[in-house]
Image 1: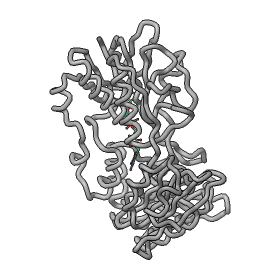
Image 2: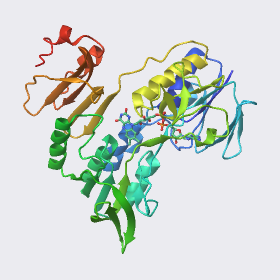
Image 3: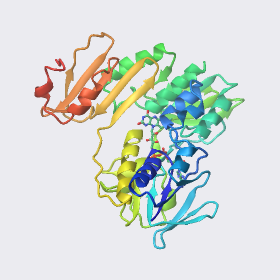
Image 4: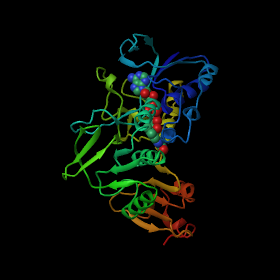
Length: 389
Ligand SMILES: Cc1cc2nc3c(=O)[nH]c(=O)nc-3n(C[C@H](O)[C@H](O)[C@H](O)COP(=O)(O)OP(=O)(O)OC[C@H]3O[C@@H](n4cnc5c(N)ncnc54)[C@H](O)[C@@H]3O)c2cc1C
């Protein structure tokens, strides 16, 4: 059996891992347009800030692929798929035949659609090469504007603070992390981040960016102008699936998969940030990995189902613990404040018709695992155990 996997992030690498566990003899080839074996993307802000070396992010070293008899073709992009003859062509004109194909190409960072956004010293962060470019640009500069105050934007902004840069985050919404934490939590977080040295302009929309002398200028729709040296964009991702557009693969935002991680074309699977499952693209490491494991098992002959995970989102900024679990913003949710010993902490559970749907934990996050297990359970059964108001 010949397995070809496009993309070597967690979805692709764990697909390979599980195919190998199930099929010791199959021929597995991974094509990756990056230069490194599997590494931790969530660790990139640490490399940017200088608190970790790039080597420390490696999860599966090159030896792992050799030991598992997995051919890893680096620095090579899959350019097209022929789903009839079951083969892919790379940008270096390598042709690879497959019996089973995995598309695990992840996401590419969005740029915002305004004039000047493709200019010099404007960056996005997705991989180790991006980190190297940003680091060299920021070395002799002081001002950084981060466009987008989502989780990744905040983590990246904090990396710049650790590099002693003057950092301002510009956010479209008028509070931080809507969709993950509620209003009270947002204000608490903003206060904590301001104490760490971050500046915020909230409820602001960018009109354009331009060059002015040696500086960058950001013009807001309100008319306000801000001058800076570097612009870092953190505005979400789009699944990296352009190269499948000439095929009959069904896609919405990502390639549509069922609970076996199968696409609409037999023997082609998709997982991770390039896959759209139940209308959702999660953008989370653990989910990409788990979908890859499901796909790998199925590609090797099993018939297992991906059980939808409860999304757990964490902010990884020094000294600030924030965990958002499941649903926190749904219409009709009821809130229950939890008693914590620490007055700086803020814990809340959200229920719908008496069933636990989600939680926000700020500061003291010790209940994370308990709550994760209790999602979907009746709140009244556990109410007293976790001392909710
Ligand atoms: C800076 C940063 C911090 C993050 N922090 C967190 C976090 O704290 N928690 C969390 O859960 N998630 C986090 N994420 C998100 C998480 O890393 C992703 O959800 C996860 O990596 C998705 O895995 P994937 O395998 O689907 O895609 P990816 O990891 O993106 O891997 C896809 C790979 O395919 C390659 N590729 C794309 N197109 C082609 C092609 N045509 N041919 C060959 N190769 C191709 C890409 O270059 C990439 O190497 C973070 C992401 C970033 C960028």
